[in-house]
Image (tube, rainbow, N blue to C red; front, side, top):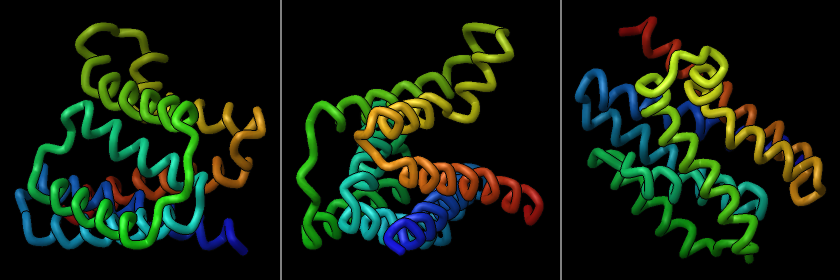
Length: 175
């Protein structure tokens, strides 16, 4: 039951995150980008409070994006502040700094690679790898294989990624 709840939270988070970004980046719609950002912050924070494994992933995504300077709109700042406030009030699980750093570096490299890869190579594998931010997926899978995370959290993370892509497709079709 725990992983069903987490899968739903991951799925919603991925969808809200992408839809918020697309609304802001393509439509410059601060109001609805902010609303979807708030929804993303709420479900991501709930997952973070609910599960140590989810905490690693969502905190890493937040910090990786922050370090990569991808927090580039007011909707991101609103989302960040709300996420942090909810986590501080709800309580963040105790985390290993080493595992958290591994996840942060993977999230950071995914963001940097996503932005730069087309500028530095024509390699189709690398372009696809970073277009869909596969490094974090590989790291979470390896951590699951090594027994640090459950394989179920990897599947939850995949639900986040699938929902993220579906939100982009839906946004494109509706706009």
